[in-house]
Image (cartoon, rainbow, N blue to C red; front, side, top):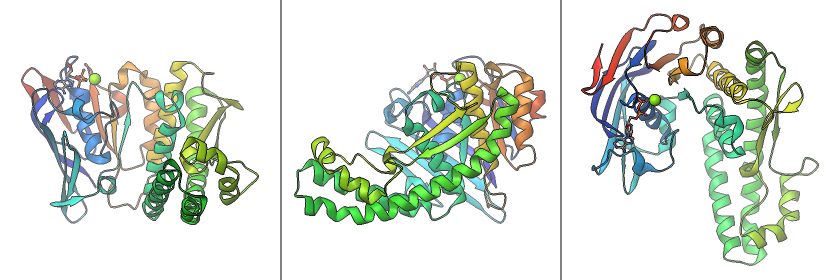
Length: 353
Ligand SMILES: Nc1ncnc2c1ncn2[C@@H]1O[C@H](COP(=O)(O)OP(=O)(O)O)[C@@H](O)[C@H]1O
Ligand SMILES: [Mg+2]
């Protein structure tokens, strides 16, 4: 159902912290630079195998230490499952139920989503961030997705290695069949998901921004041809650049408000609202009958959203089972109800409040 116990060691500024989380709503408060965001980051890393703040693992390890460890316990309908991540100079490793597990499996027991002060980057930055956003969502509504996503990545990696080594076309093209098969499955799954997503996000965007939202999927190659044809056409270009130039790794989620592409056209404040609407729609789309429910992390929402808008966002998911974990400098959030558990973060670390 949800993350109930969290134990963090040598993660960012947190030397050691233990928290029993509420299944509905946990509030974490404290002054600036005490480790509130780091706590949310630790939960995020536990569910995603990566941070939302940095790509560099060493930044997550407490200065002067060799590794960080984050352990969690998920309460499922009939059992509890332990999971953990450990990061060191040699990389990040995951454990699930006591056994080593691929990072991708963490998400199946701890689906975690964050809305933080950097949320506008989903709109503002390049297409890679939007592809990851999409894929997290597809993963949770379409169970077969991981398998063909991984097969696609593998074929792409091999093909790119062959291109880089300037192998003859016959060798490089040996990967095309897999690329096309899994690439088309990936494309179909993402397109289908976007249709579901826009249904959910449209009303939110209308209420928050007063504009009409449209989403479209650009698959990463020309509209008027198949992926197989696109690969044929792109051959010279691929060889020259040493990498495959067409396919789902080049896909883009195109976002429009009132018919106009949003990137660079709307204010930072509007970007934040739009990104929050998209993330919220994604939480809403999470299957209700799933054995685990998503944990939604809100990092200092008061800094970004007035109470009215926060209430608007929250009303969208109020009928869904979502675990809220929220940080704040001070104050409560009427829109979020009463926290089942509170923690304060300060000089002495994390304390139950
Ligand atoms: N790897 C690290 N080791 C030790 N301290 C760190 C590390 N990374 C960041 N910090 C420190 O952690 C502190 C808390 O950061 P943060 O979680 O963002 O606080 P908050 O959200 O409460 O403002 C900052 O002062 C930062 O300098
Ligand atoms: Mg913070």
